[in-house]
Image (cartoon, rainbow, N blue to C red; front, side, top):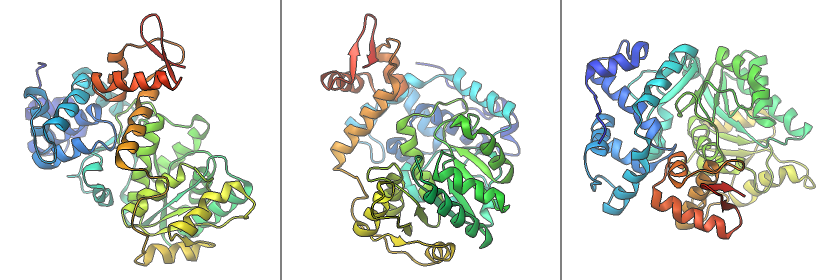
Length: 398
């Protein structure tokens, strides 16, 4: 088993400037949380439960030095699967490399012990991030009311116009726009907030040092100046479909309310809306033309999930200031737990495959953050569905 040094001296040496002005215990905790950012994929409830029960450093010690052990909400089977997911990613050089990168590009490491930590994310429970990497500052955002504004990437001119009006109005009311820096509605909302000089926050699905999409790199740099660009993933991490879906839970949790401006029937924005409803956050949706497929998802939220119709900034502000009463039950598009898990982990395996180069099961498991056994089973299913195939030296995406 690998050697893991979680002493205060080792933690401070690795953290460098990120360790000041922490106490020894805080430095050890922060260093362990950086490790967890490498071991567990975003939203890993098993990691969250283990950290919540033991603390970040003791939980890491247990994973490294003991056999799979039932702890907290993990029974023997869950512990065995969790250990199998995490142990292939135990790489001290990757941890130190991400810390060096963060220092070079000016990212700040935030942990729950930091005064700037956004406490709203704690509502995610075991799905909450273990740490955050921030380019910019969350201090200005903490003094405002954050409101999440999301919608389709393939937005219409109507959708972008409404998103800009709402975002500008949120800024005029003293609020801060939270979104995902994507094309379409996200970009329109961020740019309007920047134009009126209000703080704005962008949560990325990759490392906070990787502007994605690259076409919005200039805007993302402006967001870092006026507010913050945030990611729970270590610097250098690539965005994947799974990580986009998990990123959405942070956008929903950060906002005092979530507004979906424009969304198709199966838009990813409904995933954000589902997280908001599950957290008990007020949920709003902007009506569009009944003939527009780009607004079908918004109409679905209004009809099936008791979203509030939003037509102007005052509506948004009222939504954020009121108690909200989103309908209970499963969010839009949610399936039963077994099927949802199968879909989620299948997406992670697909993300880890390449369409051009063969990869071994071990490489795919490490990339997906899954055990070898689970990865092998999912690859077999993907092969039957025609989504993956065996090559000369491994697997590749079909």
